[in-house]
Image (cartoon, rainbow, N blue to C red; front, side, top):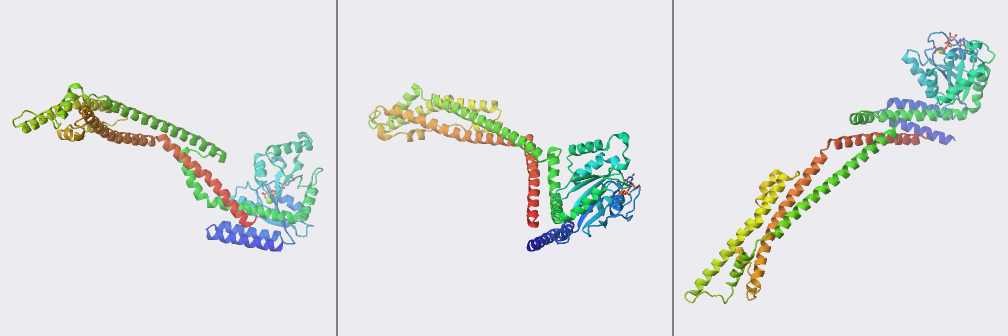
Amino acid sequence: MEVQTAERHARLLDVVEQWRREGDGEGADRLAQAAVRMARAHEPQVVLQVVFAGLFSAGKSSLLNRLTETALRAVGAVPTTAERAALDLPGSGGCVQLIDTPGVDSTDEMHRRITEAALQEADVVVLVMDYQHVEAEANLRLAQSWQREGRPLWLVINQIDKHLDLEGPFDAFRRRIQQTWTNWGIRPDAVFCVSAAGDHPVSELEQLREALLGLQDQAHELAPRAAAAEIREIIREHVARVIEDRRQTVEEAVWSALGWLPYDQAEAETLLAERTARLEEIEQRRMADRQALHEAQEAALAAWLRLIELAQISPHDTTELGRSYVESLRPDFKVGWWRSADRTAAERRRRLEAFAEALREKVRTNLVWPLQNQLREFVQETSWADAGWLADVDGVAVEVTEAALEAAVKSGALISDRYPYQYVKDVTAALKGELRGKLQTMAEQWFAAALAKAAEAAEADAELDVLRQECDALRAWLALDAAALAEEERWMQQCGV
Ligand SMILES: Nc1nc2c(ncn2[C@@H]2O[C@H](COP(=O)(O)OP(=O)(O)OP(=O)(O)O)[C@@H](O)[C@H]2O)c(=O)[nH]1
Ligand SMILES: [Mg+2]
C-alpha cells in the first residue's frame, strides 16, 4: 500500500513536470495540488471536505452555524459569503470539515470561481436549496452538473418552515420533488429537509448531522475516490486546453465547409457517410462516362478502318495495268528486234507510269478523300472533338510512287502466271496498311487528349470540390475527438487513475 502510494505520487509529479515543460502551468499547478490531496487521502488520519454550495441566500451559512452550534458565519438577505471558509464538524475529531462557499448566482464573478474551486476539492458535495426555489430550473441545473463521478451529491432542502399547510401535506411535496429530480436525471445520494432558522417538526437536521459524522467511517474510501475523480477532471481540462488550438482550426474548416458544426460524433459520422456515398456515386458516374466515351472512340475508329478496308482502289482496269506492268518485267519480255533493249525498257517504264497514275487516282478518289471527308465531318459534329484536329486530317494520306511500285516486285515470283494479280493485291494492301497506321497514330493522340480533357472537366466539378472539402473537414473533426480521448486515456494511465 505504502509503496503503491509513493509510486503513484512520483508518477503524478512526473506528469506535473511534463505539463509544465509543455506550457500548461495552470494545469501543472492544479495537478500538483491534487497529487498532495491524493497522498493525504491515503494517510491514516484523513480529513474530509464537505462542500456546502448553492444559490445565494439558500441558507448555507445559517445551516453551518446550526451544525457547528456557533454564530461564526455571517448571514443575510443579500449575497453575504464572499470567500471559502472551513469549519470543523463538532464531534468528528477534526476529521470532517464543513466548507462554506459564496452563492454561485451572485453577480460577483469571483464568488462563482471560489465556489467552483472548492467543489473541485470536495469529497462530498452538498447542494443547499431554499424551499421556495427547489423546483427552479437554476437549482435543477446545478444538481445535474454537480452530480460528478466519484463525489457523493447530497441535496438539502432548507427553509422548510416556509411550507404552508394550504400547499398540501409535506409528504406530497417530497414525492413531487423526487419525481422532478428523476425526470431531470438527478439521483442524489441523500436528501434532507431542514430548517436552519429554528426547530421544525419535520426537520431532518439531526439526521444530516448524523450522516456527516458517519462519513468518518467511509473516509478511506471517499477521499481517494474523490481525489482520483478530481485528477481525471484536471486531465480532461488539460487535454481540452492542449487541443483547443487544433480544435479551433479544425472547427473553422468545418464551419466554412458545412456552415455549421455537427452536434456530436454520431451526427458527424452520418454527415460523412452521406457525403462519401455521394462521392462514390459521382465516381461511378464518371467511370460510366469514361467508358461511354471510350466506346464512342472505338466505334469511330472501327468505322474509319472499315472504310479503308472496303475502299476499292484496284478495280478491273487498274488491276490490268498492274498485271501488264508485272508481265513486262519477265525475262522473256522483249519489244521488237532493232534496239530491243531500249525499247523494252521504255515500254516497261510506260507501263509502270500508267499503273502508278491509275492507282494514284483511285487511292485519291476512293480512299484518301472519302476518309478525310469522314474525319472532317466527325471533328465538326462530335461534341468531344477539338476543332484543332481538322489540321491533322490532311496528314492522313499516302503517296503512290513509281519507286515503291518497282520495289514491291518480287523478281523470284515473276514466272508464276498468278503472280501479277498477287502483286496488285500486295501493293494495295501495303498502301492501305500505311494509311491505317497513320490513322491509328493520329486517332490515338486525339482520343487520349479527349479522355484527358473529359477527366479534367469532371475534376473541375464544383460539387466534387465542396464534397471533398466537407469530407476532409469532418474527418479531421472526428479525428480530433478520438485524439482527445486517446490523449486523456494516456494521461489517466500515466497518473494511475
Ligand atoms: N425562514 C427561514 N429563513 C432562513 C433559513 N435559513 C436561512 N434563512 C435566512 O435566509 C437568508 C440567507 O441566509 P444565509 O445563511 O446568509 O444564506 P447563504 O446561503 O449563506 O447566502 P450567501 O452567503 O449570500 O450565498 C438570511 O436572511 C437567513 O436568516 C430558514 O431555514 N428559514
Ligand atoms: Mg453564506
